[in-house]
Length: 310
Ligand code: FAQ
Image (cartoon, rainbow, N blue to C red; front, side, top):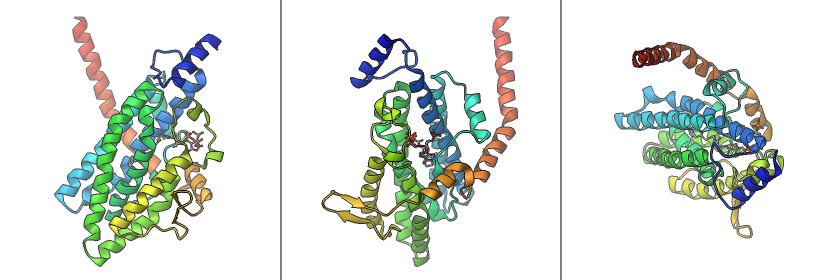
């Protein structure tokens, strides 16, 4: 790689500038962005499934309309992100093939089941809450198309988080049975949610993402911010977070919390979580059943092109 180009690239990053698709960039920068952006896109697309599971069973028209809008937003986020990845010279077909063959990663969190309606509220509150915490710094990441996509995504995630909190608040004002459902869902989703931030910093292998201004805040720092913010929200809701070691540490100015079960995390990331097999089977089914749409769109485009040539 031409040292002059490398120096210019580094200077741009150090000055807080954006790198755009046609700018020169080191191969490893391109590769790590394709990796992260495509994993992120896959997470959005697979992330439609746990909530999609409840659309037909939403308890009212209002809740159904909200849930439909949220799941559609996630599909939209996936599409922006695939488009952002394509600006780096990969095709959407390649990326999709990597997802469907099980080669590509997507967020561990979407391999857990949504067992009750309270899970839908908890996914909004905790999972979208964690997603926003991680994505706000990405609005300032060094790659322009990714940073710009994140601005709109974060606005929509903020609506997602609030609808989850509102749903839970409504249930907490309901019957004792509803309150128990909420607590049970919190108990099941708390640890997987804090695992979303990834391994501890000393095990986080992609240090280049920090050096190149892709990741602005480390996995552990974001996780700590999330725990601190969520404790207060749990108090407002009136639920208990399932961690006896969770307590305020005045010296650090942060909450301490218990040890994360990394065996569980790597097991889920490695394809052996409760729903990994179902999630991929569902994506493959959707891909196969959508073949006629892709074929029809291609045939239509060819016909139009032929008409224009006449
Ligand atoms: N799950 O060296 P690091 C959403 C992998 S939000 C699975 O620390 P990095 C919205 C990692 O890929 C969820 N794998 O990696 C929504 C790497 O493996 P590799 C998606 C994980 O990249 C809400 C290895 O471990 N958000 O979808 C996970 O520097 C509700 C070593 O890790 C994003 O993707 C995990 N949780 O940091 C939708 C945000 N954590 O690639 C529906 C963008 C780590 O070498 C409903 N991504 N790994 O094979 C990021 O910010 C980063 O990629 C991190 C990981 C922070 C996820």
